[in-house]
Length: 415
Image 1 (spheres, one colour):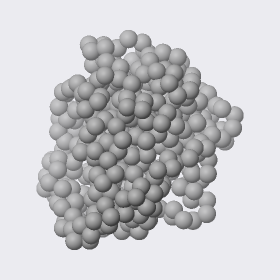
Image 2: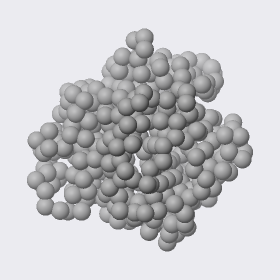
Image 3: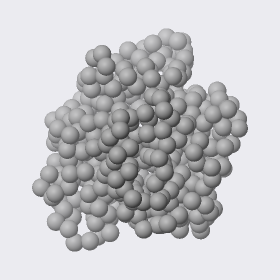
Image 4: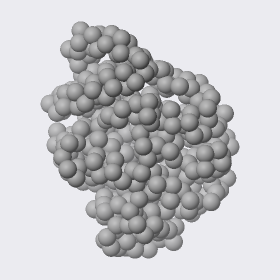
């Protein structure tokens, strides 16, 4: 890897989780690492957490005023001049040894980007108590890296034939600053969507020929009581004044793309990112397939297993269909959805059991935060002797995952 790796941690009023996200970074034995904490005008408690770590690799910046999420990412990114970078949520964790392994992979290839699988740790205070203090990650994870053609991935994701997390986003990967410079050179800034993680994945793919994908994960996504993403997808208290969703939208400073109605379905959010990149970065970026978006939104596990958000999703799709003169197309998909609703629920539940992505209950193992969860995940990935390992591969572990998801009538574990 040529140049430094910068881990950007945007944070706002989350000192309780930030301290553990930071610990997952400062314990890395890698000198060519910078840890950039961008504090979105929090109270003093956040700066005190940062100051408690005596590590010269940490740099602290603060815009001095509250910014929307995309504007804050833009501010943080402006403090990275060169090298590779990634965004780490303030309730997420960096896997042990990740910077060294990332450096070796990129040093051998010279690629501008590297992405890896998504995995999640649900903090003890997670909004859905049935998944609290649990770890979910795809298994197995061989040390294998493949090269992906950006155009191929863009076409597949735009047609909803491949998941969004194949895109080269710095939120589940690392990207060279040069790619962001090309994006900004075309559009005047980097982020033009209220969802900078999804948008940046589409934008980076639109300005690169190819990139790498590792089957080994190098970060662990944390879902805590603070999480905007989890709260948004689950529809948690969405209509209440002062809810996370309402605050997020009010502060964003960016409009949702006019061709779509905003909803908490990730398929719609992916489509919005494609449209924004077409408008601001690269007109040749494929346009999302509307029929495929309707179908994908209706079959996505977050919709199938979460009745509390279904009505809002359908209403947003109807409005989008009217705007695009595609009402007949949507109605056909809705009729299909009505016929297949229960089979789809059964299929979504069976996938939770069948796929190699078991749910590990951490409540009896001493894990209580993201840093400890990264150590536990590392133990499992490296086949070290551990009390959890038999459970991970057992039918019981997979059945537990399905039971928890169905009991909550929602799931975030399909990834």
